[in-house]
Length: 409
Image 1 (cartoon, rainbow, N blue to C red):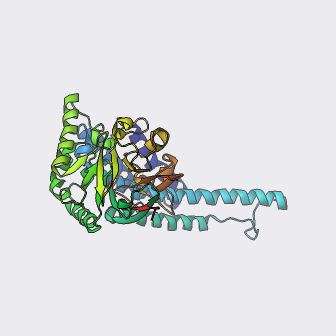
Image 2 (image 1 turned 135 degrees about the vertical axis):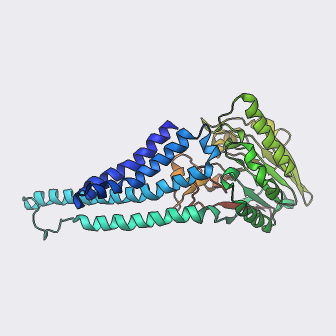
Image 3 (image 1 turned 135 degrees about the horizontal axis):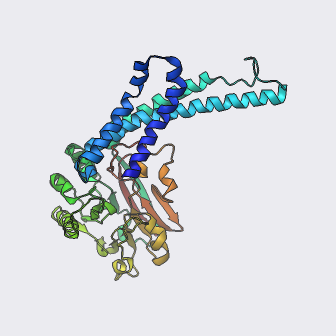
């Protein structure tokens, strides 16, 4: 948390220092006006310090909405200022290049604005203002509307190994609901359930991270989520957040009870949890295996999966694996099994995607959508909820409907 604090303060102060020294100081000598410029930043830092250091342990759990709104406010101030600073610095750089070119070509320092190599700072300042306003609007939209812009994605998976009876079978995947982030907004989850049921899928699977930090976040939403329906049932697995490892428990017994309560709650909702287990699905006289493993992530994320145990008894069948973290696919699934289709979540696409790109790609080789290795595939769902930052742009909350297509047809 201290490291995050230092990064936050640096993120806030760096563009402010630049704008203050390059623009504010030159525009006014009035100490009151100069001081006024720092008020928003000072207030944001003060509120952040209050939440983190003066509200006891587990501030992120006890004040998720307040800290989330604060994070959005930081973005609204810091990101446009950073964009403006970078554009301004680009103008200074281009001016320096113009001077150098003028000196090399004309053998004289740049003095005349008639030189073809003059790069005035004004166009870059205006560009910075325009891009700053655009980034401000995008962040505002992502925080107000983006988090509930539920998107239904229809995809197909084709294989000659899919039994004829499962040709056209539709699996609806949900992931990363992070129900603690929806406290005070049950209407959004009601809308989600309505959209899911309208798809009339044969099966619903949930690929982990139902809660943020503790299982009691689910208490006010259990009745709503119990309305999810599919003819062949609802299956789920655990994600890294579901174990409660991000909450500061008083003892190990509390942590264990938290996980047991979450598993029991899902059972009461009518969800069947596959913790290193499998189930056989039957449809039109044929069968396939649905396998689920506990979370298996790259360090420092928990690694509890037992894939050999979960697969035992499914030999020779067409198999679908539910595994929360997509890195598990390359680490073990591809090399240690012949499972053809894996469904994952976890990445959120870092809750932002633009022009088909996301910063998530710097961490995860597979971060959103369908990926293939030969005929074997991984689908990564970018999730429904959010952690900490109530914001999504481009990586809209996702409901995926995967249609199985038998190539024998």
